[in-house]
Image 1 (spheres, helix red, strand yellow):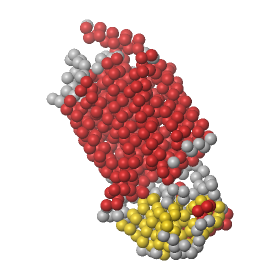
Image 2 (spheres, rainbow, N blue to C red; image 1 turned 45 degrees about the vertical axis):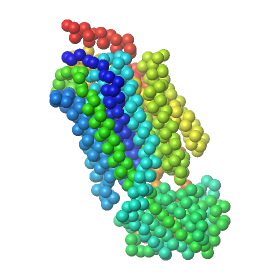
Image 3 (tube, one colour; image 1 turned 90 degrees about the vertical axis):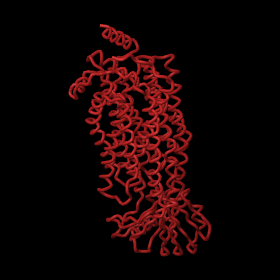
Image 4 (cartoon, helix red, strand yellow; image 1 turned 135 degrees about the vertical axis):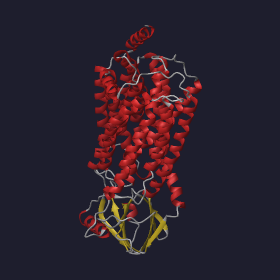
Length: 607
């Protein structure tokens, strides 16, 4: 066995840079793949949830095998770097293709595209993630040195995650808008036979039944192409999937702020269309049936589709650059010469390592709690909290909690570590998370809608996420030494392949919980789509308005938001509490126990 040498400061920087790029890619996928395919492209939420979960089951077999392959690799460049670079390049290519779904696909073709590329993405991510984290126990001695490198790497990973989390929505909007405005495929369709209805809403945004019909209207619809569903044969827009401007008598009166819209058109060659604008009482009183109205509607789905495509390309390029720096600088001068048992022997070793199994279960539960919140957050802002200005408020909130996560990893953890053991820091982390979710639950029950009020639970929750990102990596690395003492050989590649698997499994579980939530509580822009009547969506809108005029009430009000809020709070609390109970009962690798293990391993080396 080679003598381990401490990494230089520059090597640590290069290693950390790899984590930045790696987790930029992971967070983009983990946080936005469901939103991209469900909310933008229109795949049903439960189908996407099933795809994500099946992909994670597939990883159960793929990840440990990749760990064995890494362990058996011997090249002039070492065992880790070749796979790290190959995995990065292939994963970057698949990332771009995954967020560049052809707009012509729909139905089964769209589902197949999403499933195939997401599964391939998971395989290629494993290809580079396992060798990356396997370097931790191979390059460091146990204890403080390993803890220091793990803390630094996890902090850099958190930085990469935070960067993507903060800039994605705003960047996608800016890039998509710029490309959409200059795109040759951007076509404007004008309908001069459009019927406009203004419906009065009360303060709670429920239609009162007062409907004003305006016949003198022109509508302009901008879309990349006209797509018509076989069942509805219509083009439909609402306030969630479009930007619109309504001009009355030459003056701009209504936009996405303060009003709601339903626009429908029945057939591609038919110039007839109808639009309903739901407005507040004081605005309604200033309208008249003789007004001249112009309605301009632009699809935000088109903008977001362009935005995600080219934003993912930028992230993919940055990912390759970051990993290239890691591969060039890190020379693997202290790589451990480990034995390479068979796959069967590896599984037996893992099963025998009860501490590794405990950490696997704990990581799954902890990350499931975090990912449920992360995946629902964009829907919470878009459909509940922030309204039409959701992108700005979402970015502001995400910036705050991203900063909290980084501070927790880089400052809170080292500070707490001065006064407490890692076991106590784990306890403090779980307690912080539970407090945060209880505060969030309180805000939900009282239906608080002030964005800044949510900064308080955001601070506690993201402190937990930041601290646990560091702690679980340290704990998992410690199980490698424990396994070597117990089983007679080091299995860092397999152990850290399990970290890759369990993190992705947690994202799959969270995606399934989120998709069920979205389906049960009808959280999407399609929840306010008008239903066709006798094959005509225009007729469907007119009948809906006739019903509103007679009975009041409107589909524009959403009574399912409370279900979204309750899922965001109660589900993560359950996951965190179970994780805490399992960890406290079964994990035994305290600082004192690790010192004993380290001493026994040194005795074996000297024998």
